[in-house]
Image (cartoon, rainbow, N blue to C red; front, side, top):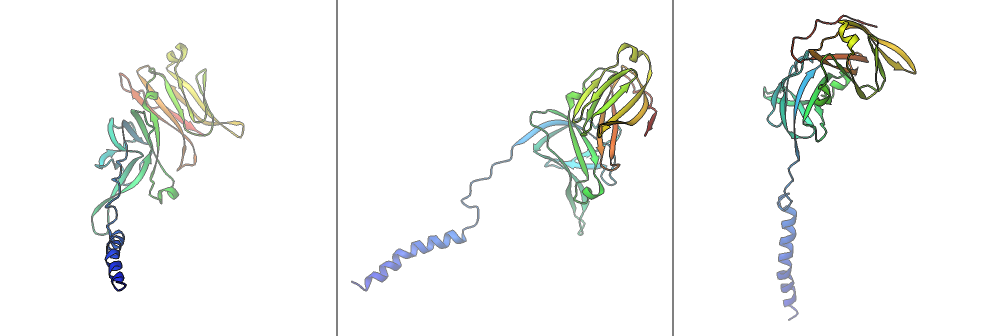
Length: 256
Protein backbone atom coordinates (compact mmCIF):
# COMPACT_ATOMS: atom_id res chain seq x y z
CA UNK A 1 0.00 0.00 0.00
CA UNK A 2 2.87 2.33 0.82
CA UNK A 3 4.39 1.65 -2.59
CA UNK A 4 1.20 2.87 -4.34
CA UNK A 5 1.36 6.35 -2.80
CA UNK A 6 4.12 7.73 -5.11
CA UNK A 7 2.15 6.58 -8.14
CA UNK A 8 -0.96 8.35 -6.84
CA UNK A 9 1.06 11.54 -6.29
CA UNK A 10 2.32 11.38 -9.90
CA UNK A 11 -1.23 11.04 -11.23
CA UNK A 12 -2.44 14.01 -9.14
CA UNK A 13 0.60 16.13 -10.03
CA UNK A 14 0.27 15.75 -13.82
CA UNK A 15 -2.80 18.04 -14.21
CA UNK A 16 -1.12 20.67 -12.01
CA UNK A 17 2.08 20.51 -14.09
CA UNK A 18 0.12 20.70 -17.34
CA UNK A 19 -1.77 23.76 -16.13
CA UNK A 20 1.45 25.42 -14.95
CA UNK A 21 3.19 24.88 -18.30
CA UNK A 22 0.10 26.06 -20.17
CA UNK A 23 0.11 29.32 -18.18
CA UNK A 24 3.79 29.89 -19.00
CA UNK A 25 3.65 29.16 -22.71
CA UNK A 26 0.14 30.49 -23.38
CA UNK A 27 0.22 33.11 -26.16
CA UNK A 28 -0.02 36.56 -24.60
CA UNK A 29 -3.39 38.22 -24.79
CA UNK A 30 -5.48 35.06 -25.25
CA UNK A 31 -7.37 35.74 -22.03
CA UNK A 32 -6.85 39.52 -22.07
CA UNK A 33 -9.86 41.78 -22.27
CA UNK A 34 -10.36 43.34 -25.74
CA UNK A 35 -8.87 46.83 -25.88
CA UNK A 36 -11.48 49.55 -25.86
CA UNK A 37 -11.57 51.69 -28.98
CA UNK A 38 -10.23 55.20 -28.36
CA UNK A 39 -12.99 57.82 -28.31
CA UNK A 40 -13.21 59.92 -31.45
CA UNK A 41 -14.17 63.52 -31.94
CA UNK A 42 -15.66 65.37 -34.89
CA UNK A 43 -15.08 68.95 -35.95
CA UNK A 44 -14.63 71.09 -39.05
CA UNK A 45 -11.46 73.12 -39.49
CA UNK A 46 -9.91 75.72 -41.77
CA UNK A 47 -6.10 75.96 -41.87
CA UNK A 48 -3.45 78.50 -42.78
CA UNK A 49 0.36 78.49 -42.55
CA UNK A 50 2.09 81.76 -41.64
CA UNK A 51 5.35 80.52 -43.18
CA UNK A 52 6.13 77.68 -45.55
CA UNK A 53 8.43 74.81 -44.67
CA UNK A 54 10.26 73.57 -47.80
CA UNK A 55 8.87 70.21 -48.82
CA UNK A 56 5.84 70.45 -46.54
CA UNK A 57 3.40 72.51 -48.58
CA UNK A 58 1.25 69.39 -48.57
CA UNK A 59 0.64 67.42 -45.39
CA UNK A 60 -1.71 64.63 -44.31
CA UNK A 61 -4.06 63.92 -41.41
CA UNK A 62 -6.39 61.29 -40.00
CA UNK A 63 -6.38 57.52 -40.23
CA UNK A 64 -6.82 57.64 -44.00
CA UNK A 65 -3.96 60.18 -44.40
CA UNK A 66 -6.16 62.73 -46.16
CA UNK A 67 -4.36 65.51 -48.00
CA UNK A 68 -4.19 69.08 -46.73
CA UNK A 69 -2.55 71.82 -48.76
CA UNK A 70 -1.45 74.64 -46.50
CA UNK A 71 -2.25 78.06 -48.00
CA UNK A 72 -0.24 81.01 -46.72
CA UNK A 73 -2.43 83.96 -47.76
CA UNK A 74 -5.91 82.83 -46.78
CA UNK A 75 -7.69 79.98 -45.07
CA UNK A 76 -8.15 76.59 -46.66
CA UNK A 77 -11.61 75.34 -47.57
CA UNK A 78 -13.52 73.87 -44.57
CA UNK A 79 -12.43 70.28 -43.92
CA UNK A 80 -14.24 67.68 -41.82
CA UNK A 81 -12.22 65.69 -39.29
CA UNK A 82 -13.28 62.58 -37.44
CA UNK A 83 -10.67 60.73 -35.46
CA UNK A 84 -8.83 60.41 -32.19
CA UNK A 85 -7.51 63.30 -30.11
CA UNK A 86 -4.98 64.81 -30.39
CA UNK A 87 -5.13 65.38 -34.15
CA UNK A 88 -1.84 64.40 -35.82
CA UNK A 89 -0.54 65.89 -39.07
CA UNK A 90 2.04 64.03 -41.14
CA UNK A 91 4.69 64.63 -43.75
CA UNK A 92 5.61 61.99 -46.32
CA UNK A 93 9.00 60.78 -47.51
CA UNK A 94 10.70 57.68 -48.92
CA UNK A 95 12.85 55.39 -46.81
CA UNK A 96 16.12 53.78 -47.88
CA UNK A 97 14.23 51.06 -49.73
CA UNK A 98 12.11 53.55 -51.67
CA UNK A 99 8.91 52.93 -49.71
CA UNK A 100 6.73 55.91 -48.81
CA UNK A 101 6.43 56.48 -45.07
CA UNK A 102 4.50 59.03 -43.02
CA UNK A 103 6.02 60.86 -40.06
CA UNK A 104 4.41 63.34 -37.60
CA UNK A 105 5.13 67.03 -38.19
CA UNK A 106 2.60 68.59 -35.80
CA UNK A 107 -0.15 67.77 -33.32
CA UNK A 108 -3.02 69.77 -31.88
CA UNK A 109 -5.57 69.01 -29.19
CA UNK A 110 -8.91 70.59 -30.00
CA UNK A 111 -11.12 71.04 -26.90
CA UNK A 112 -14.21 68.87 -26.83
CA UNK A 113 -17.35 70.72 -27.80
CA UNK A 114 -15.77 72.90 -30.49
CA UNK A 115 -17.39 72.15 -33.84
CA UNK A 116 -15.70 74.72 -36.07
CA UNK A 117 -12.02 75.53 -35.58
CA UNK A 118 -9.33 77.65 -37.21
CA UNK A 119 -5.87 76.05 -37.16
CA UNK A 120 -2.85 78.32 -37.61
CA UNK A 121 0.42 76.55 -38.49
CA UNK A 122 3.58 78.33 -37.31
CA UNK A 123 7.02 77.09 -38.37
CA UNK A 124 9.04 76.01 -35.35
CA UNK A 125 12.63 76.92 -34.61
CA UNK A 126 15.41 74.84 -36.13
CA UNK A 127 16.12 73.23 -32.74
CA UNK A 128 12.52 72.07 -32.29
CA UNK A 129 12.31 70.99 -35.94
CA UNK A 130 15.08 68.45 -35.27
CA UNK A 131 12.64 66.55 -33.06
CA UNK A 132 10.29 66.16 -36.04
CA UNK A 133 7.81 68.82 -34.95
CA UNK A 134 8.02 71.16 -37.91
CA UNK A 135 4.95 73.17 -36.93
CA UNK A 136 3.39 74.61 -33.82
CA UNK A 137 -0.40 74.78 -34.23
CA UNK A 138 -2.58 77.46 -32.70
CA UNK A 139 -6.27 76.57 -32.52
CA UNK A 140 -9.02 79.17 -32.43
CA UNK A 141 -12.79 78.90 -32.08
CA UNK A 142 -14.15 79.87 -35.50
CA UNK A 143 -16.96 81.83 -33.83
CA UNK A 144 -14.38 84.54 -33.08
CA UNK A 145 -14.14 85.20 -36.83
CA UNK A 146 -17.75 86.36 -36.97
CA UNK A 147 -17.89 90.11 -36.34
CA UNK A 148 -19.09 93.22 -38.25
CA UNK A 149 -17.55 94.33 -41.52
CA UNK A 150 -14.84 96.95 -41.17
CA UNK A 151 -13.87 95.48 -37.83
CA UNK A 152 -10.70 93.78 -36.66
CA UNK A 153 -10.60 90.99 -34.09
CA UNK A 154 -7.24 90.90 -32.30
CA UNK A 155 -6.19 87.52 -30.95
CA UNK A 156 -3.27 88.00 -28.57
CA UNK A 157 -1.53 84.65 -28.17
CA UNK A 158 1.47 86.09 -26.31
CA UNK A 159 2.09 86.66 -22.60
CA UNK A 160 2.41 90.42 -23.22
CA UNK A 161 -0.31 93.10 -23.23
CA UNK A 162 -0.67 94.87 -26.59
CA UNK A 163 -2.24 98.30 -27.09
CA UNK A 164 -3.65 99.41 -30.46
CA UNK A 165 -4.51 102.97 -31.53
CA UNK A 166 -6.61 103.19 -34.71
CA UNK A 167 -7.28 106.80 -35.62
CA UNK A 168 -8.52 108.20 -32.32
CA UNK A 169 -9.89 104.88 -31.04
CA UNK A 170 -7.88 102.82 -28.59
CA UNK A 171 -8.21 99.19 -27.54
CA UNK A 172 -6.20 96.89 -25.27
CA UNK A 173 -5.56 93.28 -26.24
CA UNK A 174 -4.48 91.72 -22.98
CA UNK A 175 -2.13 88.76 -22.88
CA UNK A 176 -3.74 85.42 -23.80
CA UNK A 177 -7.06 87.05 -24.70
CA UNK A 178 -8.85 88.67 -27.61
CA UNK A 179 -10.78 91.87 -28.34
CA UNK A 180 -12.82 93.18 -31.27
CA UNK A 181 -12.41 96.64 -32.79
CA UNK A 182 -15.41 98.12 -34.63
CA UNK A 183 -14.88 101.55 -36.22
CA UNK A 184 -17.10 104.39 -35.09
CA UNK A 185 -18.81 106.62 -37.67
CA UNK A 186 -15.92 109.10 -37.80
CA UNK A 187 -13.27 106.40 -38.29
CA UNK A 188 -15.37 104.51 -40.87
CA UNK A 189 -15.73 107.64 -43.00
CA UNK A 190 -12.02 108.49 -42.83
CA UNK A 191 -11.07 105.89 -45.46
CA UNK A 192 -7.47 105.32 -44.39
CA UNK A 193 -6.52 105.93 -40.77
CA UNK A 194 -3.18 105.81 -38.91
CA UNK A 195 -2.48 102.80 -36.75
CA UNK A 196 0.08 102.25 -34.01
CA UNK A 197 0.65 99.04 -32.08
CA UNK A 198 2.59 99.01 -28.80
CA UNK A 199 3.55 96.15 -26.51
CA UNK A 200 4.37 96.30 -22.82
CA UNK A 201 7.69 94.94 -21.61
CA UNK A 202 9.06 95.41 -18.09
CA UNK A 203 6.41 98.04 -17.43
CA UNK A 204 7.36 100.14 -20.49
CA UNK A 205 5.28 100.50 -23.68
CA UNK A 206 7.33 100.05 -26.86
CA UNK A 207 6.37 100.56 -30.49
CA UNK A 208 5.77 97.33 -32.39
CA UNK A 209 4.25 98.57 -35.65
CA UNK A 210 3.18 101.80 -37.35
CA UNK A 211 1.04 101.79 -40.48
CA UNK A 212 -2.23 102.99 -42.02
CA UNK A 213 -5.36 100.90 -42.32
CA UNK A 214 -8.18 101.09 -44.84
CA UNK A 215 -11.67 101.06 -43.38
CA UNK A 216 -13.99 98.93 -45.51
CA UNK A 217 -17.35 97.69 -44.28
CA UNK A 218 -17.33 94.88 -46.88
CA UNK A 219 -14.54 92.93 -45.16
CA UNK A 220 -13.38 92.04 -41.67
CA UNK A 221 -9.94 90.93 -40.50
CA UNK A 222 -8.58 88.51 -37.92
CA UNK A 223 -5.30 89.86 -36.52
CA UNK A 224 -3.04 87.33 -34.79
CA UNK A 225 -0.46 88.61 -32.32
CA UNK A 226 2.06 85.86 -31.64
CA UNK A 227 5.64 85.08 -30.67
CA UNK A 228 7.37 84.27 -33.94
CA UNK A 229 9.62 81.24 -33.18
CA UNK A 230 11.84 82.04 -36.17
CA UNK A 231 12.28 85.80 -35.74
CA UNK A 232 12.24 85.60 -31.92
CA UNK A 233 9.90 88.60 -31.59
CA UNK A 234 6.25 89.52 -31.40
CA UNK A 235 4.66 89.57 -34.84
CA UNK A 236 1.31 90.52 -36.35
CA UNK A 237 -0.51 88.68 -39.08
CA UNK A 238 -3.87 89.77 -40.46
CA UNK A 239 -6.19 87.49 -42.43
CA UNK A 240 -8.93 89.31 -44.34
CA UNK A 241 -12.33 87.70 -44.69
CA UNK A 242 -14.33 88.87 -47.72
CA UNK A 243 -17.94 89.51 -46.77
CA UNK A 244 -19.37 90.80 -50.06
CA UNK A 245 -16.59 92.39 -52.12
CA UNK A 246 -12.86 92.12 -52.93
CA UNK A 247 -10.53 93.04 -50.03
CA UNK A 248 -9.02 96.54 -49.84
CA UNK A 249 -5.65 97.47 -51.26
CA UNK A 250 -2.55 96.25 -49.38
CA UNK A 251 -1.74 98.37 -46.36
CA UNK A 252 1.49 100.29 -45.97
CA UNK A 253 3.64 99.17 -43.08
CA UNK A 254 6.66 100.42 -41.21
CA UNK A 255 7.94 98.19 -38.45
CA UNK A 256 10.40 99.25 -35.82
